[in-house]
Image 1 (spheres, rainbow, N blue to C red):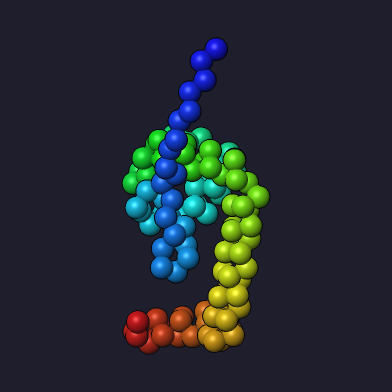
Image 2 (cartoon, helix red, strand yellow):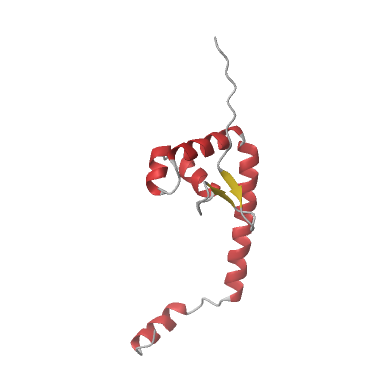
Length: 111
């Protein structure tokens, strides 16, 4: 049996906002992992996100499987942050009666 050591750089990079993106694209680690957890194959993921090379999708999935606790902790932090942003937006922008206001604007010819 021959044992070979192979070192590969995982195509992930954290942007200035702390979001991890794949392959110098705007596609996030969150997106690839969510698609994988929904049951999509790497090939199906590249069909949905053609800017991400197939080999990179496989690398990211492999990274996720090897570093599941670490990635899940990151995803949980991102989910908490998203919830906080939604809460702040809801508090900042009153959505009550929005449908009626929009329909009234449409009726009056305003956009």
